[in-house]
Image (cartoon, rainbow, N blue to C red; front, side, top):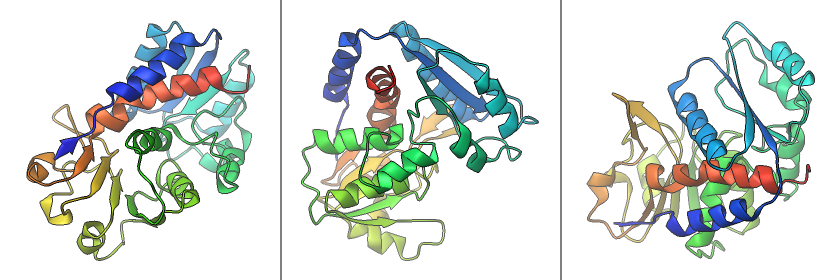
Length: 266
């Protein structure tokens, strides 16, 4: 097993962020107390502090909804971009938010952003999908004709990422909770990308030599973060692995800051 680290990608992102002379403000919206959300938000705020980027951290209580969120946003000024950290409360209508959120969309949330992705404009890709692509580009993978499986079919990762990979002429399969023959299909794929949030779910039984594995899943047990892939079980395989902690997750916040600073909304 060869682990692909993020040092070079981080270096390039840090250079772009440091070289930007723009001063921008980020709006971070969340709801409730989901542990993964809190962890991600903490990482975003830490990065904002490092680069002296102004931000608004707004967490809504579970009894609030989409109307409250939009009304709050209407009273804000000089916001250059937003990110909504999911999941939100069951009281909150995502459809309403996708239609009505103001400000520059940094995470492929609004319907106009999703529409652009469908039309092969990938400027507004969600940040996790963008970070996965950065690793694929870093590994210099020729995607033409590659069989790729993505274990995630959400608007946040699977669907937008599949549109990009298909544009690059890969053959893409999206898994959902009802997908059958998963072991057979994953073992026969060239590239496997996982983001299901189940600790160590995929073990040696799913993989073979020669594959590229990208783990974008995160979950927590006893306060410790785990990825979807059981790395220990595959350490003797001839595979390239992008792990959750030192891979995709380590550059997502930097990718967000880069997008904020270089967005068209000046």
